[in-house]
Amino acid sequence: MTRLTNARLPDGRRVDLTLQNGRIAAITPHTAPPHTAPPNTAHPSDTDLAGALLLPGLVEGHVHLDKTLMGQAWRPNAPAPSVPGRVAYERAHRAELGPVRPRAMALLARMIAAGTTALRTHTDIDDKSGLANFHGTLEVAQAMRAILPIQIVAFPQSGILTHAAIPDLLDAALAEGADLVGGLDPATFDGDAKAHLDIVFGLAAKHGKGIDIHLHDRDPGGNAQLRDIAARSQAAGMQGHVTVSHAFSLGTTDEADFARTADALAKGGVAILTAAPGPGPMPPIKPLRAHGVTIAGGNDNIRDLWSPFGTGDMLERAWMIAQRQGFRADDDLALAYETCSTAGARMMNLPIPALEPGAPATFLALQAETLAEAITERPRDRQVWIAGVRQ
Ligand SMILES: [Zn+2]
Image (cartoon, rainbow, N blue to C red):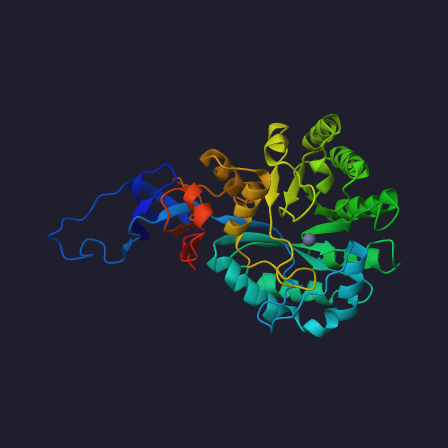
């Protein structure tokens, strides 16, 4: 049993917590020890949090552990103007990065220290590197299993129809333990959305696994693909097990097209993942939620051949989401946090982080007065517990 004293909850209450068997066993009003008592005589193992704010664990909904350069010397980014250009650059230079494990572990250490308590990672699988990155990522996930859940997406970074070997490689990865099958711009990268999605949904059905598709298209064709994916999800009974990452086309100004697409996503049980991208449209958080669509957040590329940015901090990502969505009110900032916490857990079908008795003891503590201040300040000094264990 662990006792944490003098913590502040997001609603302002000062409380003491008892943790037992990985869960929050009790939350009681904080009682200060008498001034005359020697410190910690009643409970020698008590940890005094000195009024630190507790927040539910952060959830990283979309990252690429196998791509990161974390832990290595700084490497200047070589920007390419398009997705195919970046894919080609990465294919040419991926072998220079070395094995996945030390890079992924360096990034994971930073992610966990910043409060990430669960994550989904997309791992490159293509005709050039085969299953090497997948095997490296699987090794990392297994090594970290006792600490935090890591879901692996078998991600066809070079497309699926571009080489005859790729469907079989995805099939093998799913057989060996990948949790989901991925996809990449079915219409514009592979040029045949039907054939691409037939393979993705076929593999998911064969292995009983989920789906998480990268969709970068910004034009109305992007929303048409979203409706197609939603219809397939509904037909396959896969509601709650399909995600589309990025889905920039949902940032359309065509309200009727948006409403039609959001309704289809809700009906098909398809979640949306956003990284609050730079210039260009992004899926709108509040309108999607109003239509009943789960929208979660992720860092996506962190210091790799695609991007020089990223620290692994999901609180920073919540700040970016709030900035991009024009959020200023405390309730809206709380929504940005939820996008990077409970919504991610919902998307991943994990227990929902909550600061209440019976919930997993998975949270972070930092010096801020309120949740809104935590997002605007993003204090670097954090204490993190996952399933009752201090990290
Ligand atoms: Zn990605």
